Length: 270
Image (cartoon, rainbow, N blue to C red; front, side):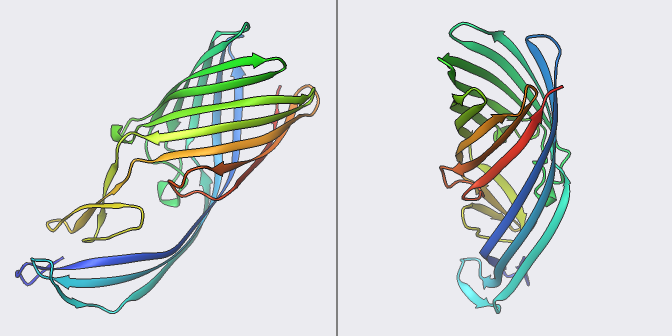
């Protein structure tokens, strides 16, 4: 903030010493086949989040030229929190354009509704629409597949992301399959946003500028590429149930992600 009309200002320096965010997801979903080619799906995640953060904060008094006039004592701060709630609701549909033969092709559309609490890291806070093209080609009793599309942010178009995957399903036995996929998500531009305080440097974010009139700082998240390796096993449990277990391993350093994310569940058809 500006003080005594002399053009001097306090600049806040925040250093995040540690930040831990844990997610535990349980997905509830159902799929209904309208026709042999067209199906619809609804998915609602239940999310448990746990956050632990430690930081230090210090104020520096500078004059209008940026010269340092003085420093306040360094303050140590902590923030802990646990929350449980629903995540963002996903409404999805898929239509098979080609099926059988050397190549299967489908069009898919996903509407993401912001039902999760953004402040508890359980929701995006924006409505998104994701059109996708899905391809699959059999290779003997195995198959390769891929998807490509865009996640369009209805509230902030600059937050639109490209979505793409490529993978394979290897049927080791009649009731056992090994799955491997590369999952990708790329932003198209840097994402700018305002935070309270003047000159708040944060690791991994770019400082765009400060606004003395409303006491805010503009930061930017650089263009990011989130690429993961997803692998696992699927086991058929009779004609209508499938058990799966696997793991997601980040291949890039962008974003806040665990070194390994275990996955598992049971799918039952009716």
